[in-house]
Amino acid sequence: MKTKSLYLTVALGLMLGFASCDMDYYPSDEQSSDILIQESSSTIMDGCYSLLKDEIEYLGWPSGNSYCRHYFQMAEFPSDNICLSGKSTDPLFQATTYTMTDNLQNVGSLWMIGYKIINMTNTLIGALDENNPNEQQILGEAYFMRALIHHNLVTLFAKPYACGRGNMGIPLRTASISTETKRDPVGDVYDRIVEDLKKAAALMANEPRGNAGYPCKNTALGLLSRVYLFMGDYENCIVTVNTMLGGSDKTYIDPSDKLDPNLASYFANAKTSKETLFCIAHELTDDRGQSSIGSMYNGDGGGWGEIYPSFPLMNLYERYPMDIRYSEFIKPQYKNNAAPSASKKVFIPNGTPGSTERRDIVNPCPTATYDAVSGQYSFVESGVNYTVENRAIQGEYNEYHVYYNGEDLTVRIIPSNITARNTYPKYYITKFGYQDGSPTLSSPVVLRWAEVILNRAEAYARLTGYDKEALDDVNVIRTRAGIPAAGLFATTNMHGYANAIDVVMDERRLELAFEGHRMFDVYRNQQNMNREYPGLQAWKEIQFDFNKEPHILYPIPNAEWTVSGIQQNDGY
Image 1: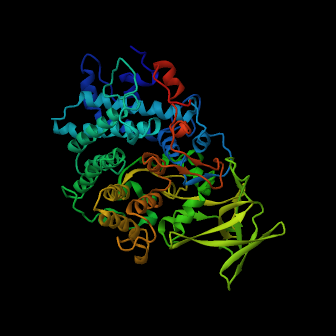
Image 2 (image 1 turned 30 degrees about the horizontal axis):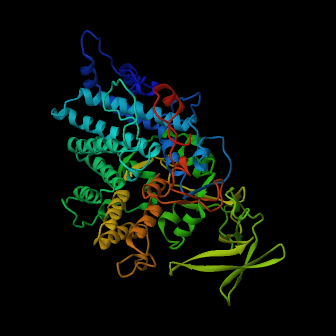
Image 3 (image 1 turned 120 degrees about the vertical axis):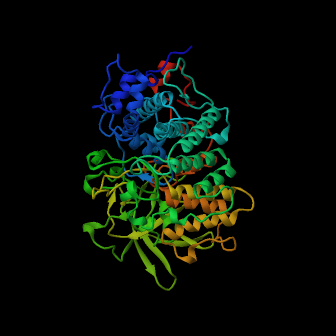
């Protein structure tokens, strides 16, 4: 029998203390612990939600040390959506550069807090009666939260389900007291998540008991659609989403009325929007300022503003510049807050050809000259004339390329008065800000209808004979984003895409950017992550090969495996 980890043995008194500092405690000779839990079940559940956002000291690091901040950064920063413009002492740097170690604060505290929440839910599940109508909602919430945290952890610390059910997963905790800590197989963890979400959906009401910081029936089903998608169970993914929409089979149902019609203000109002199925609800008193998720993306209001959209993501957005997801949530920073200048500069990656070292941008960026006759940009650098090719992509879209320093490079031509940090053009990302007017305050969205619709779209696209349904779902998302009719898809007009699944994956990237989906979307499909663009990350395509790139997975925290003896992930 292995020694239990300190992470996984949280006494009931400690759990109740986390749930609320002013909870009424009954004398032990008057009430049993089960009655205490039953009487205080909603308070304990609220404590679980608080643990998602509260700053918890870990290894002497309290500031910014919250589950939601770490999760959203650990899930998003290893992707090809972002570039980091400078080195940071924050462990987000290691996540961004695939240099993680097992003693980092984000790795350890996410694991610790996650299992505290799981243990709290286990206590409620063990004490509440599913046959008692007065206890069903809280019990359903407990099942949902247990499933959510298990899924967060298994996707970060274990190989994707598609790589095999028998691979090492994470310790599966389904009771508040356990005598052994071991890594259960990935398949067993997913089976339990599915079971928990079905139970949660059966127990919870159709409406939450508050704002979107509380789950309801459709919250559980929405997460279940994600889990089925990750498992490759496409038929059940579709049926689950259709159940949410009032159907019972794979027949298409229009989901457009589930989206917030005002996308531009959606994220600032996520707590109360009909689109949100679950968020980590924050109040003004929860504003973390520079320690918030939004601070790294947005320099407004004192934020750090050091993470910018990657070149490839920007090129994808700029196929349709009127896209609200681009015009409203990605803000170029011009000198003195002026309008963009008519003059242009060429932003060229600068580095050693063939090297996997990080690359800055040629500094100073050369001024671009436009020839109205040829329709081409050109520039002179070190006495050499260069012509910028406006290259057709997929037969319909264009990207700028130049043959520079012996390489064919993707470049960007940008107004010359844009500001830069360490040569990288500044584009602030505002998805995590402006709630209640604060640039650094948001209620980070964990699950929303747009994702659920795209879950169904991908599932349709992966089944034979459902391309039209997949494209219809994509068009619902694009129409809400302000894409004109000419930019919508049909089986007879794929706009240069080879198949429906490629359409869906690009749409997921556009719609869900920075929300913690892209890394999972790439790796669960066993694809490579191309990060050959400027930034602090290495200039390389990360191979989906755990022998070559073991750091695709996060390490089991040092404070866990050294105590419980569970096996560490390879490569650490």
